[in-house]
Length: 419
Image (tube, rainbow, N blue to C red; front, side, top):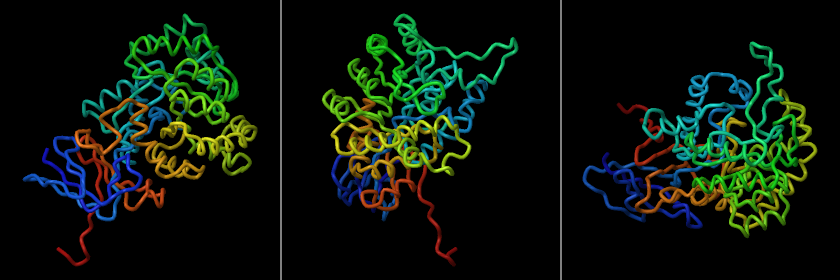
């Protein structure tokens, strides 16, 4: 493809403290130059983004493309083909929002749908972000990933309750981790605590023993896979950190002492505040909970203050915060709202933006992404305005380039009366 020069904009490379007026040259799908003025090769295409801020392609480290809140139970008994088709819209929504890379952390099915989706994106067969995947959530019986209690009203032909595979004890855990690897996993995810949306457990409930968590993390590491837990409660976070996980997913009930432990060990935190903090703030608002499970609301009423206190502690800490949204448990098209949620809890705009670019790439070990630096893959996005002054502009991404190919660009309208 011809070279492209992005010009007329302020450029933030994912590292510096503030954007600077500049240009970006893209050649053969990679960043060729970034600076106040860049070369213009013969035949280069110019993209004038005057009034915009140019940023590295965004990274959402916690998504569920096969899920939507409205379909959470349906996906468990729909066909794999149906679940694949229902994932195509979310993938496009995420890319339209400027998220050129996502980590997908588990689906409710017995297949490896997210692996197939990732391979189809890589092959150019479907439109979507680059994907890293943990195909399933490894769960103890009665844990957050055991959806049997949510399905008790559904009967199969022999009148037996639908059952979803869970694992207990180190031998079952080792087998499950190896099966995830065999199926094409990039990450291993497990439920170290209960959750808010699952009816049969509590977010502070411990799902696995220290021995079981260590077996998960060690087995995954032996295969060459990083591990991360779904976990809210302090003890589950602590056990996961001792075992050597790479990231903590959620962690919204962590104490200051445990956050310091994460910081000391260099473990990343993906706090998914857009959904969790919002629910905590609205715990006693009847309108907010219309159509939602009473048990979920009850848990947020119980733990709401602790969630909000933890959010303030995260903001004042130096823990490595990476951007993740739990998209799928909220509309995928709204995942950008995580930026505003993070800033709303006291996280600085710079830290929030790094969380979705350079820090996210560091978490996911993607050396070729996350910054606008010569030689890296040309994943580039732009917003009309300055997110350092107004984070809401992150909901208006109107230029998206993935590997040098423009997926989305501003509409250029002719002046009235011009032919």
